[in-house]
Amino acid sequence: MLTAARLGAAALSAALLTGIAAGPALADVPPPGIPDGLYGKSDPTYDGVWRQSLTLTALTAAKVTPADSAVGWLAGQQCEDGGWPSYRAAGAACDAKFEDSNATAVAIQALIALGGHQPAVDKGVAWLKANQNADGSWAYNPGNPGDANSTGLAVSALFAARTDPASIAKAGSGGAGKNAFDGLARFQLGCAAPADQRGAFAYQPDAATGTLAPNTLASAQAALAAAGGHLPVASSVRADTEPKPLACSDGSAPATVPHAEAGEATGAYLTAQLTAGGEHLTLTTPGAAPSPDYTATAWAALALTQSGHPDQAAGAVDWLDQQEATWTKDGSDAGATATLLLVSQAAHRDTAELTGKLTALGPTPKATAASSDQATPARKKTDSISQYWLIGVGLLIGIGGGLLLSLQRKRNPNL
Image (cartoon, rainbow, N blue to C red; front, top):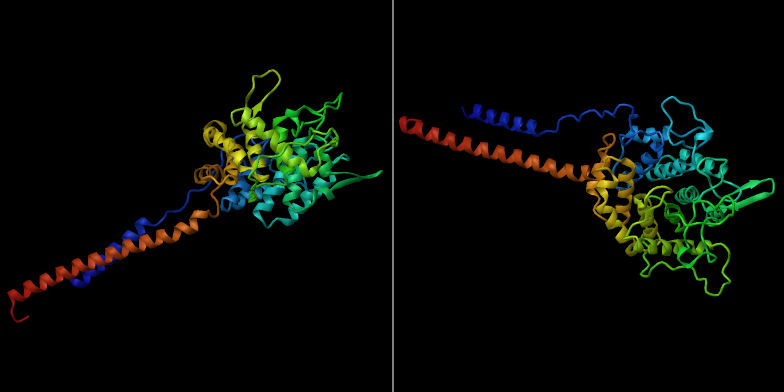
């Protein structure tokens, strides 16, 4: 009877262990029309590579190992010549006129963050070099005039690839053209501009007059490159002073902003704009009322942090946190959620909730930062529970067996 009881206790313990074991994970099923492995549920036609690249960069920085399908999708979007389009449907051939520098720049940064994709990175950098304009700039699509946003993103990709932008200049029939820093500088307002506009970036010079007008998104995205940064931002350098505006008092300043002063100059402009705008930048579109520019505010915060001015970025980070639900559509917009996560990481904020929301928008990752740390304690807890059950059952059986033996001895003194 004691043996049967012990067998019953062992069976009970086994049943408990089986009952608390994790069941198999459900298969990842992407929404209809969304490729397997792609993050987000919206139409990827115009932002598929962009949002995937930002997502993989942010999750990798959060110590999440993305699913092979997610990484494979991004790698598979690259064309044979090294560039990326905004999006290419499965089985569709590459078309050079649809490849763009923005998608290529962020894809390069994502693959560098992931590691293990050097051939693809090298091809991407070669594509940027081949599609640089003679004035040192980059256009969104090759063959067009350059713009500050595209040039800034390309320069950040070069920084990420440990390629000196000063050494990148497209050769032409007349010899080497302007380098990448020259290309970026042609969009930045210098001492000839009004004092409150100095350091800003224009999207492009006016086609008729060549004059530069400040543009907040261009300023914010170009600022990260001007500060020598790339994604993810992880600068540990800290300046205890505000960004330095251009020194233009003697009237002898150069026509363009020197590269050494570019980051501080645009940092000073962005800080003033954030302060005047209630810690956010404003989107002004012809024919529409001004509205908060979440994306520009985020890139401004990244640039200020990169240049060593986290205190000046802190208000913008707070504002973005407060606007999370609106901007990210309650965590359903992969691009916005990834950008906010990158900002929060750079600012050393708590990122667990954002990481979870972003992870939920794509295939189940191979591993997370918490999985290995939490697995062992969970197993230990399970083992402890099982041990306590076994000990408890054993004690009860021992006590019960002792009582039975005592009763039998009382009934039969010869036992």
